Image (cartoon, rainbow, N blue to C red):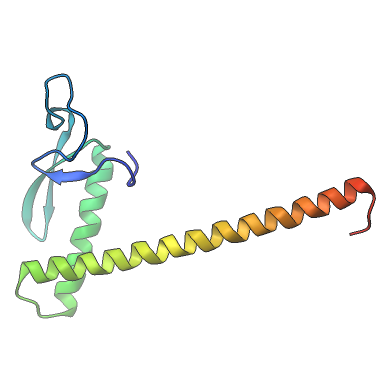
Amino acid sequence: MTPEDGGIVEGVAHDGPPDAAGTREDALAAVKVEILGQPYTLRADSDRRYVLEVAKYVDGKMREITRKLPVASMARVAVLASLNIADELLKERQARARDAQNMRLRAQQLGAQLDRALDGDPP
């Protein structure tokens, strides 16, 4: 599974077609993780190692928040960590879009140079 398809949920399945037994949850693998000392059983249709990596990342972000800010509420820590992760995601998407645009532009430039070279025009 890639991060764009499917998903990870705690104890219940996400939207999708039912499996042969009638529920999508039956098809999802249960993975036990710990985030800020709290155990969670997550269900995902992705590789166990990927789920563990995601949980470790979230745990790290939440621990970073608790180190930097004296926040007593776990909900507040979760929201702040979510905002930080969303910020990272959006910045990464913007960078990918810029890179893709730069590659398209460079490909057009190289294509034009190749056309000129094949036509015998000087560069």
